[in-house]
Length: 527
Image (cartoon, rainbow, N blue to C red):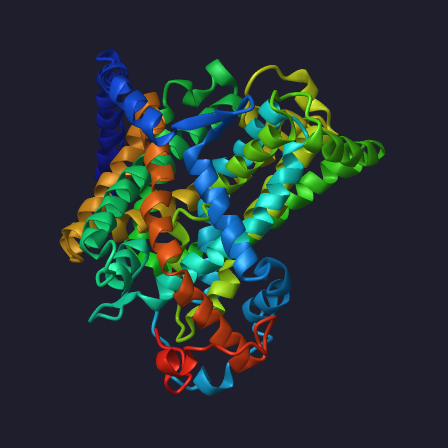
């Protein structure tokens, strides 16, 4: 029997290899790209539409995300600063809401598991390669604006996660369904201005989410991962140079057997992997900085100087700021509505407390991991040796300038980040898929199988048009989501003020809410 099983597995590998070879011979990826490119270009042109002011090109979506981040930061009186200490206390369990401790909490995962899941979802290639791309285009000054964007994103993340938890749906089996689809439809359906459009907006969000997860969180991630692994194992002489589908198959199997366990299994995986990988990544970056300790003061000086007088970009400090905010907010996903999907599954009866914890995600993703990547590239001087846009290869060179082993270590860490990203992307996609087609075991398994098949396909082929299209759909998630978040901003502020007053926290603890009695009743927060 073992021999038969072994022979069976070999046959499966041979068949898969044969199918991938046929696909390549047919140039299927080229044919699909040729067909989709005009469509992708047209849709991307609409979604990435921009205006030019004094020579500075401003994309509408980037401006929308920045306005939302500024608005909620100012309205919450810079909650990212005064609420940071409270967030740490909550996640480290040094603060308890005693009156709800004995109540049975609704949800599936712990706060820490949800936090690590959302961090891992956005700390993939987006931070390892995206930060490198930002520096290669915008110069060292981009780092300053990325850090600023990270702080401003914390308030926006707080707002959308609070709504995700407040309007989540508890299924009969105890599982949770939440996210923008539910608070767009549930909270806005009676709105006199856009109530009749709310169901359509929620469906638009769900469709864009599915496409984004299969493309950006799946095809792009696995393609970048296989490219990096192939490069460090010999390039064209690597075993994986013409067998990249094998990597895709391995990742697809790991992904499938993890995601069938739902958010609980994903949370268990990310709660173990993400802290280790983030710590290892930052320590490796610190080693590079330590090796170049003599250049550190000059690096800080260059970053601050070029933040306001960039040499790499035309358009001055404003263009540098726009590029830094664009890179940071796309990486930490603030305003896109993905984090509320994961945080909706947290075991809690207190949405505001979880929203405080969620603020830590953009801080870790952007201020720590993303900035560490960019700083290493600058302090090592590798950015000066690059012309044009560069991605993970620039990060790899910066790490390799200290130790030949570091690029291999980077590949391992990036692979773990990518796997975590794909796991979380599958959960986001499943929730959007189930919202459209029903939350049954059959519909869930159907999406999981489709998602894993695309992992194998993405490892063997390069669908540039699909990836570009998925990027456009990913960013378009901000439109329906931010419409809801803006229109529900009063709800967010009332919940925040009630929480601060009740638990004597922050800058709103002494402020009286005029509508407190009408909204809160017995002053207990309800999900």
